[in-house]
Picture 1 (cartoon, rainbow, N blue to C red):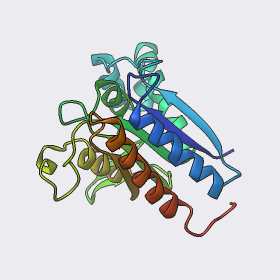
Picture 2 (cartoon, rainbow, N blue to C red):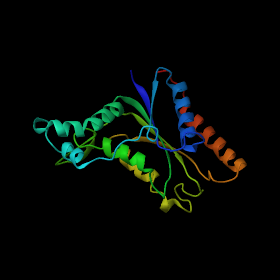
Picture 3 (tube, helix red, strand yellow):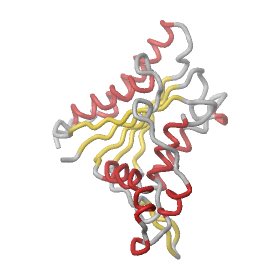
Picture 4 (cartoon, rainbow, N blue to C red):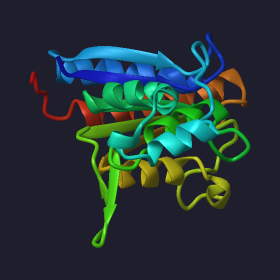
Length: 211
């Protein structure tokens, strides 16, 4: 059965703005596509190891030459890539950390970006191999001004990185929703949240589909 894969990267188990936003995206996706299941992976509740020398060696070793040690080193990558490849839709929640991605999300990325599995390379260049139809980014920023054209947009290495990465892997339809100013006063944060939730409801549910 096809499903929505939700990848959460905030260390907060309660009160995470990015995860709450991702949950709202998933809720609206399931209204539009009510036959879809949901599969969630919390990268902080179940941390992934960083890739090792053996992992990298296994990534570039032909199948016929794989040893048991290299197969073991790439087993996690195999599982995560299969989980991702079977998803219809990908939802990633992430707070901006020091202008970029949380380390747990980068660990997941390093496991799933793999030649001849999620991308290929030949004389014509790179080709993304993931069959995932759409991706949604649920992003949270402690300060305001990170959106394109705003004051801190040049310091936002989270959003353009994720969009470029997913496109490189073959996911061309990437939708971005962001909550900014999450360290502000409660009223301001609530107004921001309501504005973003209204926008995502309009975008996702525009033309209801039950496929």
